[in-house]
Image 1 (cartoon, rainbow, N blue to C red):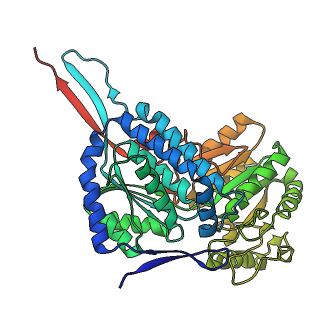
Image 2: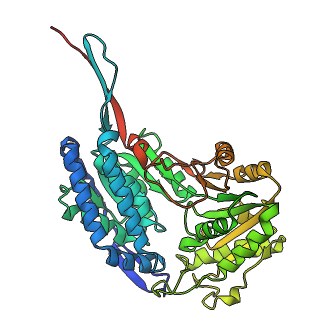
Image 3: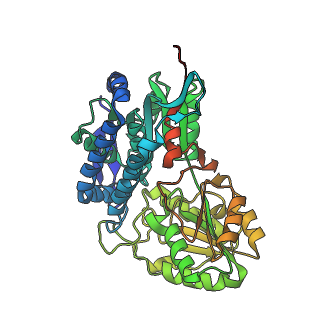
Length: 463
């Protein structure tokens, strides 16, 4: 009996996609094709690899409207925002193609009489990329395109919530002329995902998802001495200093908290505000959140879509209810959002004050449209609270004082520090996390180092 996956659309609970899961024979065939393609792709001139990637980017961009509609139905992002993921894919992929020649160039060592010495960046082999549903293209592109540029071959497994994303990406590269076997997708069960990680052919795993999922990857890869990149959870903080441009801080931090219905690894989940501006910040934030329109994602007027599943909404509701019992104040009336309903993925946004770190909503990843705002007395208290977390993906500071913010940023335990912005990946910068937010790096020239291995050449010349 053929096992299948079903994608249940959060818009209306209908089955939007149904696909057969890969069989054992399918997996073996994909691994064999990847292995057969590996050496030829490694030997393909970099200029040709870059040209094919650029062509694939163009094909992908040309399907923006269809891709946006699919994304809306699969994971619930409002249709007015869905095309942005295609634009982000193009931005990141294009940047990595632009820098590939310099980033992958040999490292030349100073001349030494009688010797030629250099370090070459060799591809790892077959990279297995496991991508999530919340930003299915923007997470996958971080590993897929640099891996292919570097001369690796790639197997891609997307979430069962977004299987069409894997198919779209592979098809764009096929149309662009990528040789057979270099880039393939597999629709896999959790059990078979672990089996692929353990396969002898796999030399690198790039995983984006939960902390529990990252632990699964580590267990499956244990003892094989392969490399892995893990982008896991986040409980990203923002700090609004007394000297911040308050209007900008409210608009930016609230967007960072509620965009994609709060379903972002690097979204703002807790905000610390200096006591001197706290009340005004809260007043403005509540007014702004009240303007959101919760509704079906296929409605162009919707600005806040459903969560991916009813269970996800129930989890966030439980966090909010628990915080209220512990003394938090809720500033948004859920009844002001008619679509909000128990047992559904439609969840009204919420702003909480009088929160502290005894509450799960301030320490446990929410992944939904809720944010806690806590008053702080000074920079010292803000830094202490920002670091009081198991996670360390990003942190945002809002201030007019660049020097002071930089000093604070040096003390915050995160992979990225923002000033006066948040929830954005600049492809020129290394994307990385600390603590339970993961390890490894994607994007920037540094990202190529995690998809290659150094190979030294020490050549003694003879007359």
